[in-house]
Length: 264
Ligand code: NAD
Image (tube, rainbow, N blue to C red; front, side):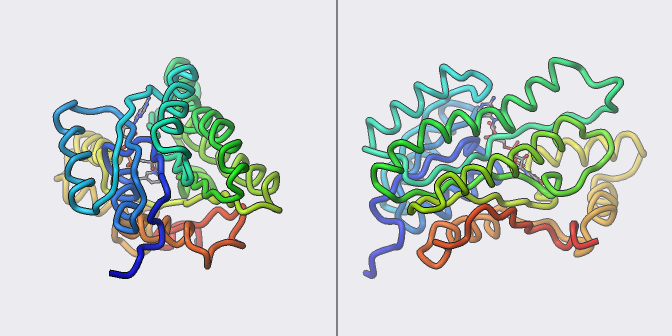
């Protein structure tokens, strides 16, 4: 069998117990990377996920349940991952949450949580992963931003601020390491049908007294010209490309995969 391109690398994907993070973790595992899972969820299901991924792709897996709002837990996770695997070669900052409210009604505690998880956690994981990547002169940091890292929508002040912020962090990380083998890029998905978006579909269906299918169609057509959801598998394939040798000079980009959303 041909050696897979990420054999011997270790990828830590935050928020990988669900949705996009899980899709990316599985795509990286399929290329041979060992996977460090992170995120919330049922302990037995997470243990199964770890076992299944290891068996299906013939890689090693670990799970650390660090709460990404807590810098000390992030530090412990990075330390444990590096000591268990020798390094974190690929870091995917994916954990994220949403809260929808106008600015004057936005709960202060929700603002702080969105910024902590969507933006500040990536600063912590990045600062802790870089020294070991710099020692090896190889690394890939992929930040999962959003179409909302490039354009705004009403009701999403904290989310849009966090996602524009992470695009900025991506550029600085890329520039500070531009003369090394470490690249940093952002992926900016449009609508992907994950639990994060399902909540918004359900809220729309309830508010407008329409079916779930109608709510999905309306949500898509408002923003996403293709009228189709982006999939975690498609995003996984883009992450794999960003880890490849072919992408060695892709540095500091915010790459939208969004069914045409930001082309408008
Ligand atoms: P999701 O809700 O399916 O998954 C979120 C993951 O983050 C889960 O594993 C969850 O356990 C984890 N998480 C949440 N809070 C955490 C915390 N405090 N500590 C550790 N882990 C935590 O959501 P998703 O749609 O897969 O979103 C993943 C990323 O993609 C997010 O950054 C989101 O903003 C971004 N994104 C999603 C979409 C979309 O349409 N779904 C579009 C653009 C960007």
